[in-house]
Length: 95
Image (tube, rainbow, N blue to C red; front, side):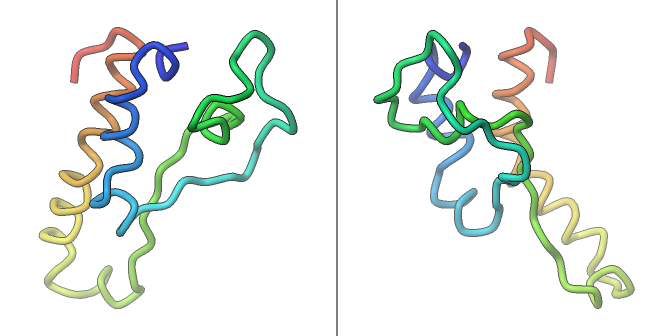
């Protein structure tokens, strides 16, 4: 419901160019149809059909054994911060 009520903020948090360039949504468990009671013509209908909202970023194996690991993780977590902030707002949690 929070996505329907705050679509512009969702668009920035989940579909901004910076997020789309580096991160992906898991589509592991997706509903076949839109959830009951939600508009079938919603622009981000696929997002509403997700059973779990998971944003991920793959990293090359060599990053994990390099001296760049900490800087890489900090950069990637900062990139995902608006997404986490949105989810926290949806759940009325502090971020």
